Every structure is written in structure tokens, then in C-alpha cells.
Length: 165
Image (cartoon, rainbow, N blue to C red; front, side):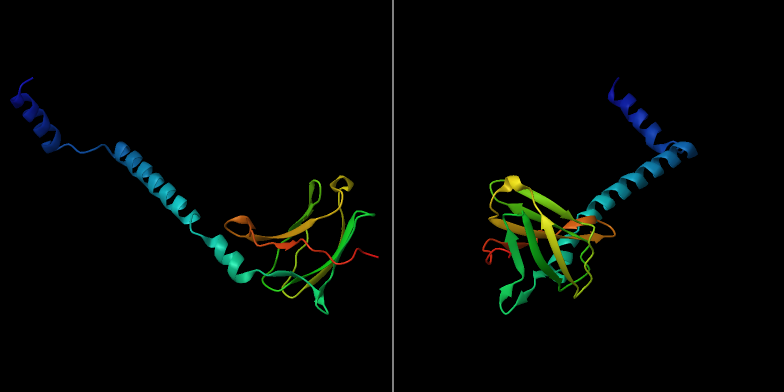
């Protein structure tokens, strides 16, 4: 194949009067639309909505009375009494991580706290934990597009008042 043959093939391919068949054009168009949709969906889901929701609107706190937090741990009955207050947007549940020699996570995701609501609760923890050294309350928000949003904005308690009576 010499240069002239290549030139004629290229010319025939690009300058022919025939177009792409309608079926092939439709398939190419659908394929192109799917690729553009996938790329834009990936881009949209990577927009950092979570930090805005968590940092700007959510505030969960242990209630204080006379500068003393309303929480107590009973290492004999393996229970914790506490009072939480939601000072922000609706919180769609929370988890409590109890840490001693081991850790235990207590699921309270079925409890919804409306703004300015207080919640009094007693939870029982695994006796194998031993003496409780740390408590962490992790709130969860439900977002219509993201589902369950873990805010990484928890209440951490490492110094406890006297044990429960």
C-alpha cells in the first residue's frame, strides 16, 4: 500500500456522502449520555454536604445543673444514667460507646431528638468492660441524599462525677 492508496482511503472515509446509520447514531448518543450522567453523578455526590450539616446545625450536650453534668456511672449494676439535650437540628439517633478494659457500643438510633428536647435515659453495658473509663455519645443525622450521616462530632466524657447512688 503506497501513499496514494492511503490518501484515497482516508479521503473516501471522510468525504463520502454516506452518514452513520440511525441505529448506530442512537446507540452512540445513549452511550454518551450515560457516560456524562455517570461523571456528573460522581461529581455531585462528592460535594461536601456532610461538614456543613454537622458543623453548622448540630449540637448535642449533656445537661448541666449547677455546673455539674447530669450523668452517672454505676459499675456495680453496669448501668449509666444521663440526660441529653439537643440544642440544634433534629437528631435522628445516636450511639453510646462505653470503654473500660474493652468497648461496647449501645445503639440508640431509634430515638429522635427534636430541637431543644431533653432525653433522660438509663443504659446497661456489658459487664466484661470492667470499670468505665470513657463514654462517647455519637449523634447521627439522616440526610435525604446521603442517608445516615456520621458527624464525627461526639460528646466525650473521661472524667465522671461520683458514682450513681
